[in-house]
Amino acid sequence: MNLTKWLFISSKYLNKEAILTNSETLMYPQIFNYANKISFFIASKFEKGNIIAILSHNSFFFIASYLGVVKSGCIAFLLDPKSSKEELEQYISKSGANCILSENRLLTKLKNTQNNVISETTISLITEEKPIFDFTDKYIGEGDSPAVIMLTSGSSSNKKMVLLSHKNIISNTKSIINYLKLNENDRICVVLPFHYCYGTSLLHSHIHVGGSLFLHNSIFIGTVTKEINEYNCTGFAGVPTTFFILQNKTKFLDNKYIDLRYITQAGGKLASSILKKIKIKIPYVDIYVMYGQTEASARLSYLPPELLLKKIDSIGKGIPGVELKVIDDNNKPVDIGSVGELIAKGENIMLGYLNDEKATKQKLKNGFLHTGDLAKVDRDGFIYIIGRKDDLIKTAGHRVSPYEIESIIITFPGVIACAIVGLEDNLLGESLVAYVVIKSDYDLKEEIFKMCKKKLVSYKQPKHIKIIKSLPINSNMKVDRNILKEKARQEFIRNESGLL
Image (cartoon, rainbow, N blue to C red; front, top):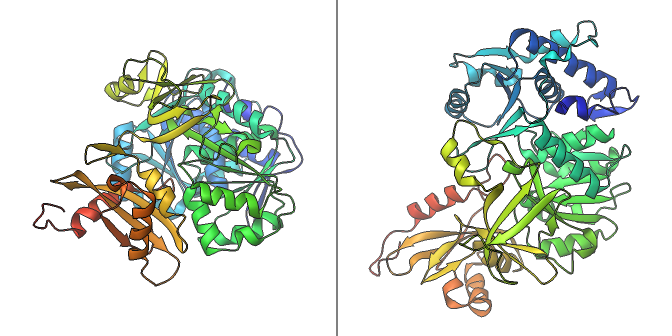
């Protein structure tokens, strides 16, 4: 089935709020009607399978355009509105997009593009026309045909374009609805961008069950502490940086939430100390730790809330319909407690990378997605991520996971956030550099050094600790380690011992 048709299969005529902001509300019949009109417009101008890029922040415009393009049988390419003009030109050129639907305030970023640009104003005029409910199905893409292109995380130079089918996303959305027990009474507070697979998964799941989405669009994330109650939100989703900020910069954990029944966390490992603090402060809210990749349409595993404290560092097990394995270099399952690569199989796994057959073959082997994440499995079958292959730091003959060291430093009183990167070192191979964000102006560097010497073996101890105001965050709200690595190269000069 076509993704958009499936999303609205039970909700299109519901007389209830679908999308809310601080100033406006869209009912289900409205958003369905808008998507239908945009779909008809796109299908009348472009052949099925054409790529239509969408450049927009979270908004009514984004949602209607996205759902309309997907229903038309064309492929929606979700661009990051924070990208530079040069980056956008690069992505659009590489994708071969035939047209860009753009929010008005972002049109200046597209001045140099040779592509057809359709503005938010034009789309608004289309949605004001008479209703079109007899849209012919002959244009509609479905099943294994491509529906969406999303960019992976990472620096702008190495982002890949992930091609997802209608079936991929429908399969993943069914699983998410299943384990989160979502229904039409649920309302999610959205702080994650919709161009990011975690963000779009919120949109897909709630529209299908007839729930609602409140779009938090303030530059100050702290307002969610009031908005969750004000808009009767039952769910909240975030990445590690979301919870770092909420815990240390707001009164998020001191509030009493009336309707909130669950929190989801994905997009990287959140320190166990923070997870425990959230559970202690708001024990009546279920906390779902999750794991996924863009290549998997969003989600691969989850840890049931009732096991949070018992399996605090685990990503859980595969979601319904997904098979997960941890394998060694010979593609054999590893022994309990041994480290290998996590691989995944299911209907949610991508078609491949757009225009990159070589990278696709490296990622998809024998029917499995090779995640590039190193993991181990305990006796109960629960999976623990050790770190990404690319992020492991080779120091003094050992492979070290930055996450292990970060989880120690983050427990130090006054520390808000921490990121560890490797720095080229003639003696050690790589030395460890810790970038640390603290609450006060007082320099805790020496105290952190002392703690690391007590709690970590010598080769896991940072050689450099740098106190900074904030960690660099990429468009998917993850720590940008590439920026930190370059920062380390520039800040530490080679000395007599050969260290940088």
